[in-house]
Length: 246
Image (cartoon, rainbow, N blue to C red):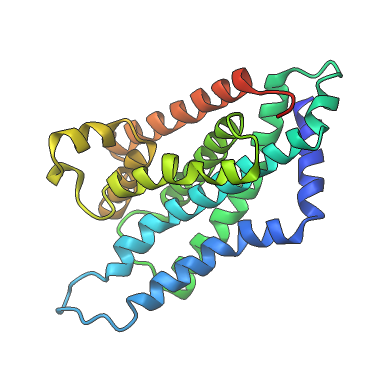
C-alpha cells in the first residue's frame, strides 16, 4: 500500500516540472547566491572562508525549507481535490498513506541534497575537516525532517495560503535560534531553552561537529538520533491528524 502511494506521488511529480525544478534547482541556486555573496571577502592568511561555515549550514537549511513548503502544499492539494477522500474509501490505512508520501518526497530530498552537496564541493570548493558523507547524511535527514513537518502541518491548513503561513510560525523561529546568526551558548536562558526543543538546532550542531572532526563524535551521534526521533514522531502525529478533506 505504501509503495503504491509512493509510485503514484512520484508519477504526479514527474508530470509537474515546476515542482521538480523547485526541489532540485532552488537549493543549489540559493547556495550559489551565498557563495557569490562572499566571493570577494578579504581574509587574513590562514583564516577560513565564511562560505565554508555558512554554506555548510545552508546545505541543511535550504532543503529543509523547500521540502517543508512542497510537501505541505502538495498534501493539502490532495485533500482539497478529493483524492485523499477517494483513497480512504479503499482498505488503505492512514499510516500507509503518510509513509507513502514520506518515501516519495524523501527520495526527492535525497536527490536534492546530492545536487546541492556536489555543487558545494566541486564548484565552490567547500573545505571542512569532516568527510562529505557525513554532510550528506545530516542534510538528507534535515530534508526528510522538512517532509515530516510539512505533512504534519498540512493537516491544520484549509488553503494553500494557510499552508504558507506556517512558514513564519514553524520555520523562521528555528532559523533565528539554530545558531546560524548567534551561537546558542551566547543567547539568554529563555532563547537557549527554546532552541533546545527546535530540530534545526541539532542540525546546525551536527554540521558543526562534521566541520571540525574527521570521525563521528558522541555529540554528532546524539544529534542524529534526536533528529531521527523527531522525524518519526512527526510522521506518527501526521498519520493521527490526517483528515480526508478540508
